[in-house]
Image 1 (cartoon, helix red, strand yellow):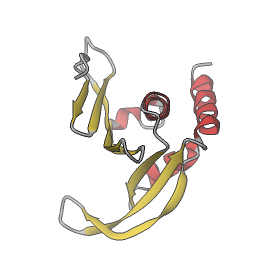
Image 2 (cartoon, one colour):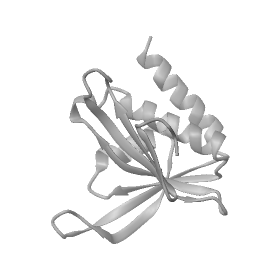
Image 3 (cartoon, helix red, strand yellow):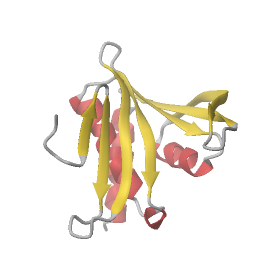
Image 4 (tube, helix red, strand yellow):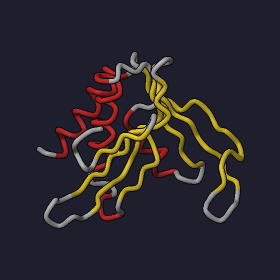
Length: 146
């Protein structure tokens, strides 16, 4: 188990909680690396919640960069996937902006909190894609801090 209180390892899932300020304890974002399959060297990044105050600030881009870097460079995965609600066009655009490949739609794949079915759109990044995507993300982060 990681000694960082903001990182939790449970079974095949790593959960990350990002705080804006330790002093303010203001929650910025939560996200997970889940369904880690070491045999087939793949996992899913998702279950993301980002405070609306941080939309379009680059915070999600930075968190995704760090998780992807960890997946490809520490866990040596060959594939990371993302599953996004078909209604969540903001998240779909964010994944497309960083270079994730849209693989397809699973129709009526999951229920929402009100019990209605919705489609899920699947994206992936492979180890072959990672060098170019890493460069893109580093550039995006660099521009934000210029």
